Length: 337
Image 1 (tube, rainbow, N blue to C red):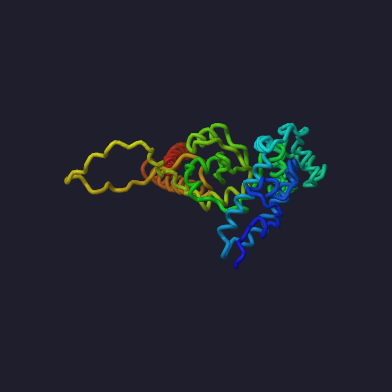
Image 2: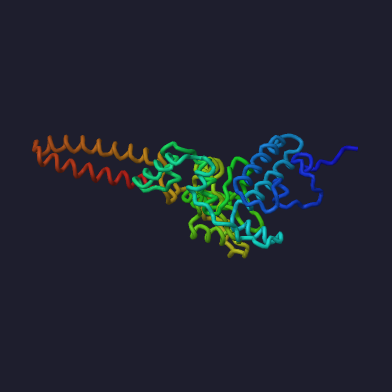
């Protein structure tokens, strides 16, 4: 008789037989482990092992277990959620851990950087008015995937490499594209009736509130690298934000019947460009059209003045400058739509 697969026993080598497993058992940690670094280390080791089964006969079991491991790690590296979880397991001192370490203390303790590199990043951050975490990357003193876990721990949030788990495209599709692109955020999963949103930065409270109303549940930030979020947005989030929201559950008013004389369908019109920052390609295209308009206007204006009014250096230059400026401004504005 074929032995039934037990992914916890056969893949993770977990000896406990009682089900369900708690987060500490699942990640093979001592009960109430408080070190986020150790939690992430155990998670990554087990994640790498389970991904070996991501294709083939046990692909579904592998994906389900990857999600379960991620939920456990994200809970135990989120200071607030871990306190609530530990309290539910009977921990008397839940939420009363020792003094939290600062971002810089964590970086030095985990040997991501040394004191000299930290001093250099501080000076650079102060000079150009950016955060130390970004200065470290810009100065090539450390990479985001080493800096952001420390930053996440310092502010009590979890960190996740988005390539570690399969993302739900249908969940991502429920977030308006313009919101996802403007605020660099995508939903990762729903855990214990909370929506976990991945972003390189803590979400703006207004964005959290909009998402809470849209999904009908609390929202919690999960930090990830900028490269991570950009890859996911490029793959899953369309550029066109004009897609309408789903129709509410209440029955809408009936549409008027189409008459025989009415046209079958109106001709499609070009959609307005959605608000938000322009992409580098859009900026380049707009600049090229504007420069072309300025150049052509200058040539036509100079020739017209020469043949019609005679050559006057001061007048010719002034008129040409005004006309070229108007043409450039109009062209730039027209390319907005």
